[in-house]
Length: 119
Image (cartoon, rainbow, N blue to C red):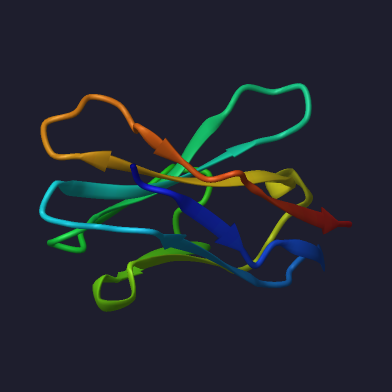
């Protein structure tokens, strides 16, 4: 069982930056990717970014491309989401999740961290 814990959320003004971190209790050869999702009040959860665990290949939602950067530290079992040029519409609870090799879905999720961007 993989446990994920997010940190780094908070309140920031528009145009500011935050760096989210996700610490996994364990990662191994079965870990295919780590992703970030977000859910704003009254909206469905949406994909933000994903990185393959072994190859480090990133992919982003169009809404954050060029502003957010996803990375991972294999030695520390950690993933990060650097968020720059934040906008009020980025306000949401941000979740990290991991997907195993061969799996179609993200089986493991963190509890989420709140990001609030004021205008």
